[in-house]
Amino acid sequence: MEVEILDAKNSKSLGKCRVQSDTTIKALKNEVQNLKKSLTVHRQALRLEPRGKILKDSDTLKSLSVTSGGKVYVKDLGPQISWKSVFLAEYAGPIFVYLIFYQRPSFIYGSSAANPVSLTANVAAICWVAHYAKRLLETLFVHRFSHATMPLRNLFKNCGYYWAFAGYVAYHVNHPLFTEPSAPVLYAGLAGFIVSELGNFSIHMLLRNLRPAGSTVRKIPKPDGNPLTQLFNFVSCPNYTYEFLSWLSFSLMTTCVPALLFTAAGMYQMTVWAIGKHKNYKKDFKDYPKGRKAILPFAI
Image (cartoon, rainbow, N blue to C red; front, side, top):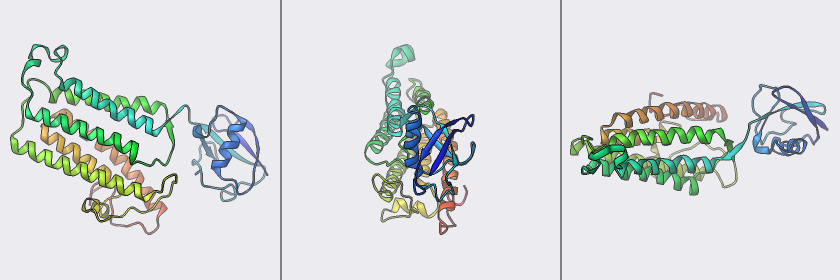
């Protein structure tokens, strides 16, 4: 049968593809690329209506009730870049930016740069580098991405966010006139940071094991033998919960307002993502646990 491909932006026909009723959307994207070479499979978002819902790669034309003579609209998502490349760039940057301020260059802090570095600044630098080093290693060896690419513009947006906040926080925590918190506050924040980082890693490992390599399989995440994964009994995205707790602990450890602002900004964005994922879980799984919230137990 023949299916006509139209540009979602102006409804202009790109041509017709000869396909079978059991052809998947993923296979149809290859046919669209043959019609227009610049539209690689990763740049395409296929829809049944110009502004309709994006079709899943696993859907077949038959399951979508597309028959001979039917129309499918394609939206050009623009230049793409791999998720892994974006993650590596946005996570490596904060390490280098933070360490610049940690080294106390005189062109930033002037003559006071020679003042002794506080214990809190030393501990904070170790925690900061450890967090982003962990993220880099997880990107390389743990995460399994459901999508191969994202729009190239996200590289600049994401790097701008992480790198700018790294400089903002580092400038204050490493300032020669920085006032340290009391030892109990420092160590309480450090303990909370370590536990939260371990919890975050535990959740990432559990999620990795739910998805076989090379697949997009989705299952209901449930706690395993690791006690830190028990948070799945209360929220859909405990990785975000632990991420929030990590930076809240870092803010306590440093008693630094810029760190708290970074925590608040991150919590806002993660809450948006968590609510979206929570809704998708409930939509895709009819037996999804009703007592779970999105990110904060019993609250959100």
